[in-house]
Image (cartoon, rainbow, N blue to C red; front, side, top):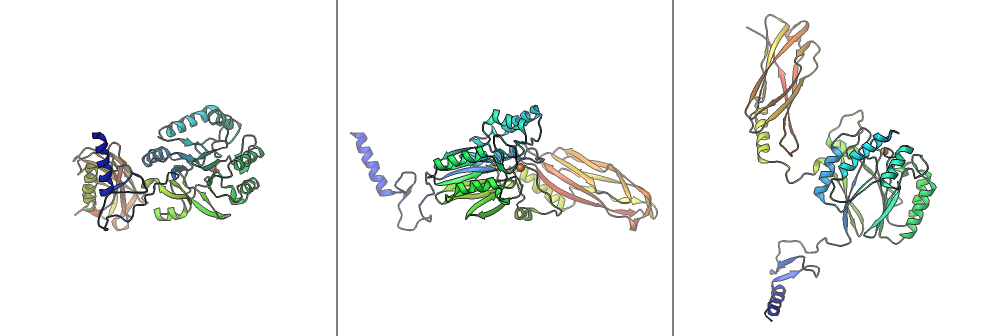
Length: 425
Ligand SMILES: [Fe+2]
């Protein structure tokens, strides 16, 4: 009885003091007189919405560690699952041991994901009979489908299929397979197509067959391969070609900064997809823009502030002037003094820029300094032939000061020293 009274009191209290949102008890707020510190209470909590991540190419001369780091960042985001668009290992070999060891390496990387990972085959993954055989041993059919929360996922094999090796092609069996799948799931709310090569770009005949099968349904297509992000609208649908997740970055003739790289579609990223009632909403997250809560720590921040201050004051790395007797330089000396003004250890890596008249020994530096330690490095300079002081090109030392605390990204600070050459009096 006592419990029943308690229940009644609780219900009344909730009715008087709280307002529930969307008829559920997920949100309980205190009633006010109309002025509230929020815009509205229509929470984005549709049970049919879900979020997943797409990762892109990691091949063609992949940069070690980038993809693995991306997987750690994906775990921070906690999507429901992760899907690739192919080119996961370097491949292009018939050496079975090598193929297996490349897959072992890759599988161990994706094993760290806390959610499922769906493989899609790229040209680097299935480039010949041996690679197909091993793919089948490890992953089964190179093309497949699945349905998640009423969304159909089609994973194609743009290297032909299970029988034919032909790039930019979907063999007859594969076409038939997807015809049946699309027929079976004709009522799904959306279809997402994953195909490694952007086959639509040159209207590949077998791709046109798939487009015919997709017909009037709502769909979105994702591909990779080119390593440059681009979006096309075709048949009124979005066709997205992804950049890289550690794969070779396309380097053109022009060196560009970050903004230009983004504009060119040349970046490492993952795609964060929210499947909404109106279709997929995409957020491209560049890998250098995702950090854990341990993005930095106080000691590291203090170290960087301190060393930046000393760099601005010209005190972090100091080079003494080269003094010469007479008008011409034959040989001389400078000393590089490096000081760690921080409470954490630091590394310094540097080198002299190539010089048309002088040779420098040593011409590179690599030092590790404990907190508040300093080091002096003697450097000898020689001229190929005697040269007048006023005719000597600038001698420049470029250095990088690096702080690396366990579990943190290294912080790099650049320093440039122009060494003065003067006549001694
Ligand atoms: Fe590729």
